[in-house]
Image 1 (cartoon, rainbow, N blue to C red):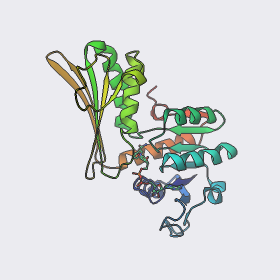
Image 2: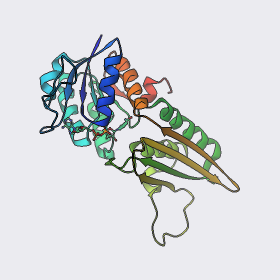
Image 3: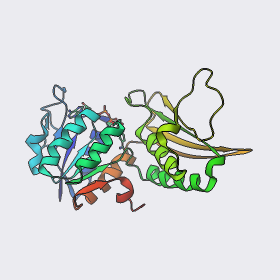
Image 4: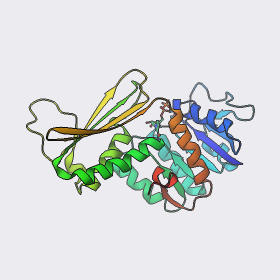
Length: 260
Ligand code: NAD
């Protein structure tokens, strides 16, 4: 049995992850954490577990901690876990490059997984996008379009940025110099090495990502559409089993899914 604490327990992802933990015979929820002042603090998510606003109260009984909150909250949890050296799975998105660098540095001393997208399909898409970019090379223009629900706070999505990173590294391009966020006004002709990213927000879209490779007389599109948050929650369940036995270090979903 693997004992798990979920941070962001009342959120869209937190709720799905908790439901899935209850369904798995080898996982047990031992703690649920929410932000201070949240209306559901003190309420039960199972007969044994009440939502708390203090990770340190419940972390003692945990073997793996799962975090789907906000960058600010996640960095707070990271500091707690770096001290007690228990495995942390961060699904939160919206970190700055500097924050990601710091996370990678701190996690040399305890097991930590950071993944902007836990779905199997998207992680396969990372690999396919890299391979397509390598095969097509510089003569195809790359644009990424993502769509999410109207409550999403960060833009573009962490997944779109991760796709851009894969493609930029496959094409030996400097990501900072070549990323273009949307276009407006008289911006001039597209530069050949640009990687465009466009964010659509609306309704209850769970998460769509398309990479367009546009050449002369043709274009190739890779599309992934998440139709339910269960795809991310299933990835989290796989990650929990992996991280419960992981050594200190930094991991991503490619490690968990054996895609490296
Ligand atoms: P949400 O807003 O529904 O849930 C976030 C929850 O975190 C809220 O209930 C909020 O009260 C709680 N929270 C905020 N501060 C907290 C704190 N200090 N301590 C404990 N809880 C705190 O959002 P969501 O749709 O569940 O997404 C959460 C994060 O996960 C976002 O960054 C989102 O982009 C990301 N996400 C990642 C994946 C993935 O596969 N990695 C998939 C979906 C969403």
